[in-house]
Image (cartoon, rainbow, N blue to C red; front, top):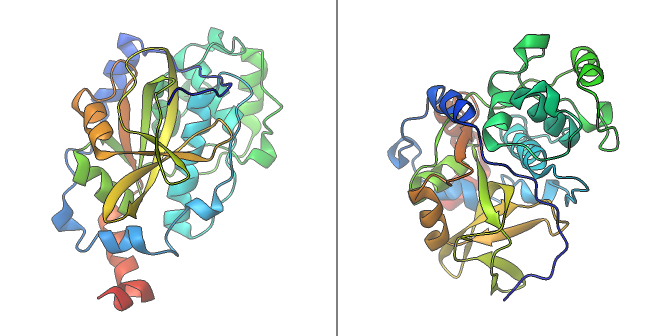
Length: 289
C-alpha cells in the first residue's frame, strides 16, 4: 500500500573518496554461525531485546543518517553494558556533515552512510575529536550548529562517549546478519524512499526494496520471529519506532551492498567473547537448553 506519511529523508550518495575510505577500513570479512552456537537464543531472550528501551525518533531535519547512527550506538551500548543512554542524534548529523566537508555544516542537505561510519570509527582527527558520540543531554536536538567553526569549538569541548563500534564490514548474507545482531551488531543502511508497504500484523513490512525516490537511512537493530519466520527490526526516524524487513527484501539489499547509498555491519569489540560470556551467565540460555 502506498505510504501517506510526511517525512524528511536527507541521505545522500557518498563521494568516491568517502566510499573508498570506508571500504578500505573494513575489518569484518565474514561472520559465521559456528562461532556463535545457538545464536537464536540470544534473539529470543526478552532480557536481551533492546527494543523496549529505545524511544520513538522523529526527525525534524534531513538528519536521518545521524539518527540511525545514534540508534545503532544505543543498541550496541545496551549489548555491552546492559544500560542505554540517549545519544546525541544532532551531534551525529553535524559531525557527519563536518566529516564529509567542514563547509557542509549547517546546510542541512543530508549526509552519507560512509561519513557516519567515519565519525564512529575514526572521529574528527583534524580537530582532535575522538570517535563516538556525546549524550543527548550534552548536545540537545535543538542545538543544530549552522557554523563549522562553532561546531568545531563545541565538539572539541564536549564529552564524547566511547565509540561502541570496534569494526565494520560489508552487509553479510541473511544468516550472517541475524548472527551479527545476536553478536551485538547493527546494520547501518541506506535505501530509496518511500517504499510500497506490505503489512504483517500491526506492523509495516518492507517486503520489496524501493527502487526510486529520495534517500533514507535506517538502522537494523534486532530480529523477531513471527509464526516461525525471522524478520529484521529496522529502527526508523519518522515517529513510527520501527518497520520490519523480510528476508527477500534484505537479500535484494545485500546483493548490491545497499547501492547507491551503501550499508555496513557495525560490531562492538570482542563480539565472540561477549557472546560466550552471555551464554554462560544468562538464565534464558539455561532455560532454552
